[in-house]
Length: 57
Image 1 (cartoon, rainbow, N blue to C red):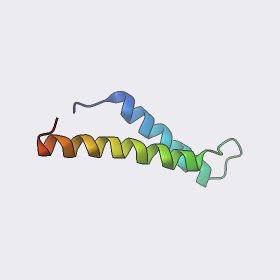
Image 2: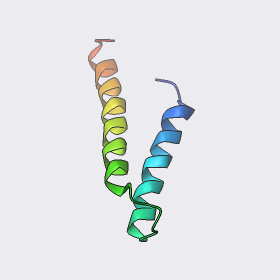
Image 3: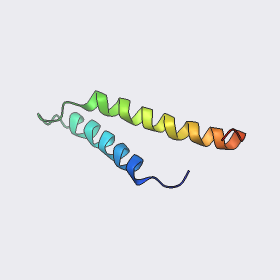
């Protein structure tokens, strides 16, 4: 998989949501959603890597 700027941007957004939530900013209430987004994106990337290693893609 080539470098995907869009996926890195989503990962950045997810991490930013979590960090702002932990600093208790009133406008940042999406910390839990940020964790979910991060895990989904990481799972997508890990699945792609594993499929390439086994030759299924």
